[in-house]
Image (tube, rainbow, N blue to C red):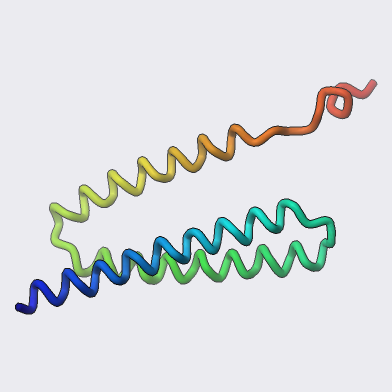
Length: 102
């Protein structure tokens, strides 16, 4: 019974982490689009706050897993990190007429 309750709690923590990651990404995207420097800084600080919340919650999740599950989770997290880095690399840069000024 206790194991089932722990799985339920871990499931809820994972859901919260997912929701907070989405909120963090939303705030970062908003910060990229805004022209107001003060608003951009506020949005980035809010995104950073969500990042800290995710890290704390992820630490709790990791502490409840057994070593085998931790290895699987680490592999999944690495794959997610690589896919998010690839998505950032695809972001368009400055147009050629700006970068090729002479």
